[in-house]
Image 1: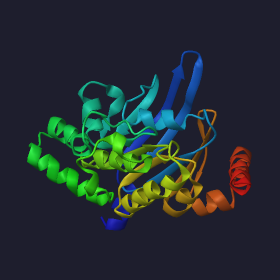
Image 2: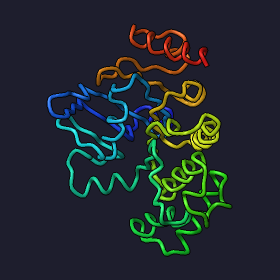
Image 3: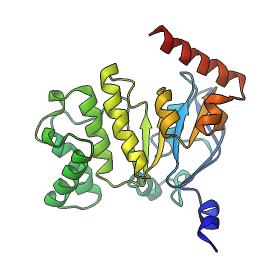
Length: 258
C-alpha cells in the first residue's frame, strides 16, 4: 500500500454521523455528518444561532447529543464514561472568553492541567509551559496574573494553556470576538503559526481573511445544518447556496462600512 493511498483512506481523526441535538423543543443541530482528516484545518462560519459553537462543543462533550455518533481519534465519545476523559485529554479548546483562573499566575494557569491529567512534575510542567508561552510570544508574562495582561495576551495564554496538554486537535470557539480590533491580529497570527505546524484545527470564526489564508475547508452552517462546505477558493469564489451568498454579502458590506 502506498503512502498516497493510506493518507486518503486513513480513518478520519474526527467523525460525526447523523448528529442531532435539541435544547428542549428547539433543534439546534440537525443531521450533522462531518469527517475531519488529521492535520486538516477547518473554519466553521454562519449567522448567529446557526449551531456552530454547539457543534464544536459536542466534539469534546461540553455539550451532549441526543442522537448520532461522534468518534474522536478512534474513541467513541457518544459512549460516555471514561471515553469522555480520554478524548478531552487529546482535544484542546480555546473559548471566546479566555477562561483563565484569575487567582493563578500565567505559568500556574498553564501547568495545572499537565500536572493533574498528564502526571507531570512541577518542573516538567513549567518547562512545557515556558516552551508554549514562548511559542505564543509572551514568555515574559509568565509571573503575571491574567488581569495584568491585555485581552489579546490573555487569549494567547489560553492558546498556550491548551497546547501544554499536547493535544492532537485544537478547537477554537470565536477566539477573537471578545477582543478589541487591534488585538485580533496577534491572536490570528498565533493560530496561523499553529496551522503551519500541521495541527488539526476546527475554528468557529467570522474572520474571513483567516478562513481564506488558513482553512483547507470552509463549512457554512445555517439553522443547525451544514449547508455548504468547500475549499476557500470555491467557497468564496463560487458559493453554491443562496444562504451562503447572503451571508458573504453581509460580511462584505459590513467590512466596507468600516
